[in-house]
Image 1: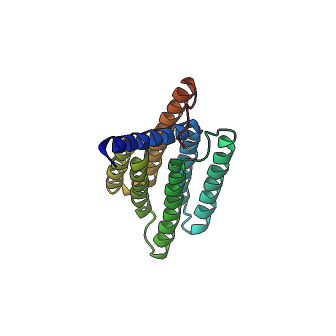
Image 2 (image 1 turned 90 degrees about the horizontal axis):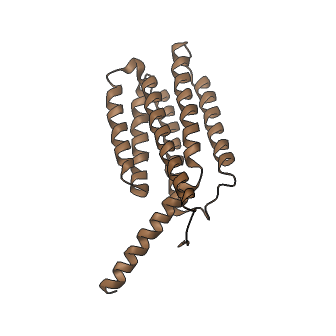
Image 3 (image 1 turned 90 degrees about the vertical axis):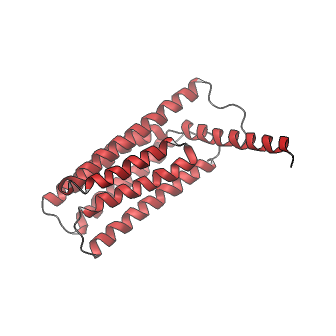
Length: 204
């Protein structure tokens, strides 16, 4: 491969990645994230309330978050119905993999936290680290701005060690701000993309 062919190949890769991002923007992920910001923040607030009310066994928390996750999953399929941008892109498949792995990791950490007999206030800082890890992986796929989000979550995890009695409340606030602002940015990108005429000629 000569230099000209290599430059053409790199240009094609850039165009494919750019189109994958546009396809993700054309999906309804912005609205989904903004909705989930409220639902998840309410879940964290309810978790804090349950513990303060004296519920120290796993049952109520398992029921609460099973309901939150069920609502989130159903709402994704409802809000994405008819919001197609062609076949599911490589980027979108990777995002599904990242967040599915994140949820599994959170569930495992919760179980370990209970088995080890750790105070539930240990959980928010670890959750923040897992959030940051997921966003760092998104940064490799969708742009460097997500690295900044990951760094902010890492700082929040450190901050939670200074206010342990309010760690879950802080986690709810941080997660709401992160998910809602990210959803708003995706929604704006979708509106700009649609205003520009949707998608052009497809490469993949």
